[in-house]
Length: 169
Image (cartoon, rainbow, N blue to C red; front, top):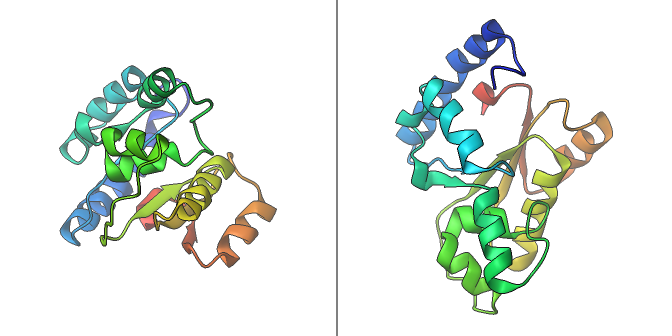
């Protein structure tokens, strides 16, 4: 992340994100990361930013999981906006692969909220809901989306909020 953002911008975002993560955990939510990046790209920044106190390695769904599922099932492409990544994050790798192979979705009454910043995130959540795995969505405005998309998302019943910063979640 250091090559992309000024340290002060990161510090300001981090100062808001850590209390937000803590509040989510205190409210009973389990945090997970669902990213199109490979594990080696994401684990180091998580540790360097001190976010590993909220997010352990087992809480990461990464491109490595998608790649492995594509190789083992022969199904392609499974990356976002496909439902596999958010389903993998919510159900675990083995159950998500089983669903890919035709198994029924396990009944999970717990609430799932996906926080994303791009059209692919929103579309992956739509696909996950279409599969029968209910998931709500919070959209964080960023350079990865545009105003018209954000207005569409805000009007969707699965959307809980459109926010300017992760710390607002």
